[in-house]
Image 1 (cartoon, protein in one colour):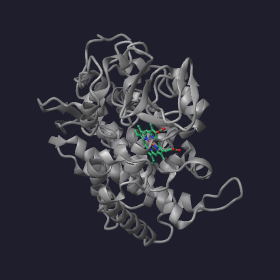
Image 2: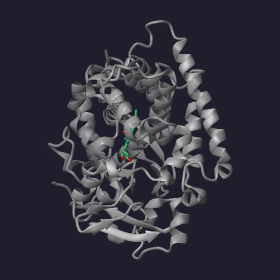
Image 3: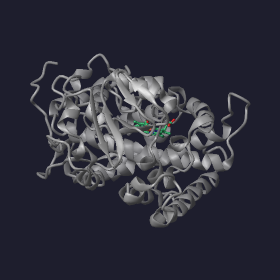
Image 4: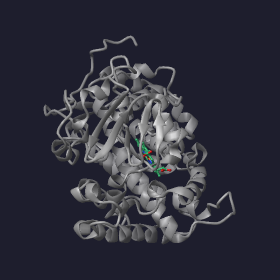
Length: 468
Ligand code: HEM
């Protein structure tokens, strides 16, 4: 790393020096869970405490993380405090299913999300890129908002072959926002509950939301099915309808497909939108990195890209994205509850122990990274196409690793390339932008940026519209 290491370090919530009382943890959990993680978590390999009557561990040691997420993954499940709030949107799709049901879903869906299949979705991402450019103007813009619009458009097109502003899809972005900003927040009832059915009366907003979400998904599928025959051959909906279980050959029912697309939409839109936001936010502090990216885009423009392999021609862009996901992993914590007793090295785990492997903490851990809080895309030189070190896990690890990792990275590369090929991005806002986590890592304020049209791009650069 050749740069001044102190160069770009942006503010984050100051970790408490000592463990906070439980009432304060609960209060902060609903506003910004990062602010509850103590300084020791960034220095030690394991931090343990009893919280809300539950033995709770934050683990950083890669061997222990591997044990929980891979080696003995079968002994661990997602906690009730995650399953209850997510159920209204994620239903019984891949994220919230378990056991034999999950295994069947995963083996049917995994082949659809390989790079080969994601390559077929490139035209959808390119069209979303063109839509983004059409909405961007010179001058002051809210890029967080624009990138969210582009991400939901990309997902709607890839899943259903329809743009986000089409009649069928129009309600979906609002519903996803409503879900993340309200319904999906952990309540006291989630902490007190012993099953998903407990205290149903107190969370009626979730039941009501689930009905509207189901109707919204039904409307977008109807809009997609009303397209001219042949128009929607290369979308995820079609892939799901064509999917067959490698063990037994069965197909997914229409109800199961609805549950999966509901899951993919809810899991895939905000995570990717925010990852793109953090990338441009960080790049706005680093004109040199932007210049490097633009040089690559001038040499090989978005409009020239035809295949996934073509995206490897923008390594500087990829480095910025990897580094943004390190500093601001949009899924900042992965939580599991022990189904039965276990041992983690010399630590005894009882049934019911809550274990957290937090990309946020691990990615800023003092023992794993040089200059952990600095934005240094150059640390990824030569490693752009690798999976990264074991202490880099923005997409999780093990059998439940993110299904949409290739989808998200491809979408982000196309949309960011499209934007950066046209514009120089300058932050035009003095307000501090802090990361805030309820479920995903979002900015406390959506800052204003100034976009300067970049004259250096060849006029036939296209908006990614050249994808075959
Ligand atoms: C930058 C964007 C994204 C990030 C950072 C991200 C991160 C993650 C992480 C960390 C997990 C594992 C959670 C755990 O083990 O508890 C996960 C799971 C999952 N993600 Fe993503 N994700 C992203 C985008 C997407 C997209 C675009 C889709 C779909 C189109 C998607 C679909 C899923 C699904 C279905 C699972 C559950 C897999 C299973 O349990 O078998 N994600 N994601």
